[in-house]
Image 1 (cartoon, rainbow over the protein chains, first blue to last red):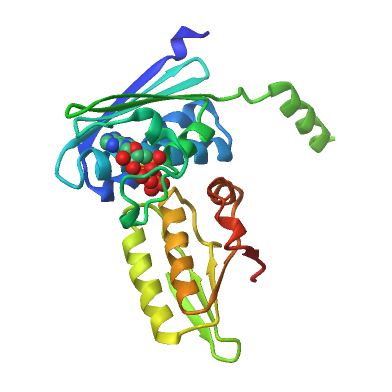
Image 2 (cartoon, each protein chain N blue to C red; image 1 turned 180 degrees about the vertical axis):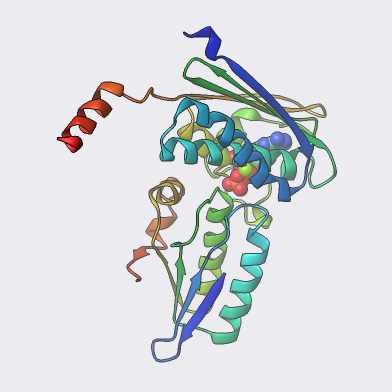
Length: 158
Length: 104
Ligand SMILES: Nc1ncnc2c1ncn2[C@@H]1O[C@H](COP(=O)(O)OP(=O)(O)OP(=O)(O)O)[C@@H](O)[C@H]1O
Ligand SMILES: [Mg+2]
């Protein structure tokens, strides 16, 4: 691991749904340093959007609170922590189940955690009722293969 | 989001151009339901050609419109899904009820 490459960012914002796009774009811009593919960037944006939306609509239930995001780079690994000081999750195992939602009347599909788990390498949920929720996700971005790239390049220039 | 209605085919098409998330969905839903009630189509297509982002809010949006379409005897189909958007719909199983279709 190249220590000199390690990096960290932190952002906090008010729990308004109009900030969801700001949040995912900010993390994606930070992660861009690892040279992710378009698809990897899209996966990261979606996972961030899921966790941030959950903090806003479930954690704070549209009351005003602060959502915090910390993102770190360790070598090619991206680590994202998204936390709120909202109401917390009663049953984390249940919450992770596909199609499980406590807000079906709002046309939620209960797929948020399933999407986070499939788009990121790992997802950990820490939650305490009445105190809040923290989601930690990681994703390792493959290094662009320079040899392949150079081979393609010489083929093109020949 | 823009929409057009083809009277001969009783086809209502929504060309979505918003990023589909929890912030934008209420507006899309309001517009879609208004147009569906206005035209009472036989077939509804959501065109994703200009959608650059979608999260799980999009699944809820499509399931909700599917139920509404069912209620009035219309079918619902999705067009021009990108690979990221298709992945999200596939996970939810909704593509079995709301199939993909071609639309230029
Ligand atoms: N930050 C949070 N604070 C409190 N409860 C949460 C939080 N995040 C998730 N939950 C609970 O976990 C459930 C499942 O979350 P998940 O994101 O999978 O589905 P959803 O948000 O209900 O629907 P979707 O994400 O598909 O719109 C939620 O319905 C909610 O009860
Ligand atoms: Mg969710």
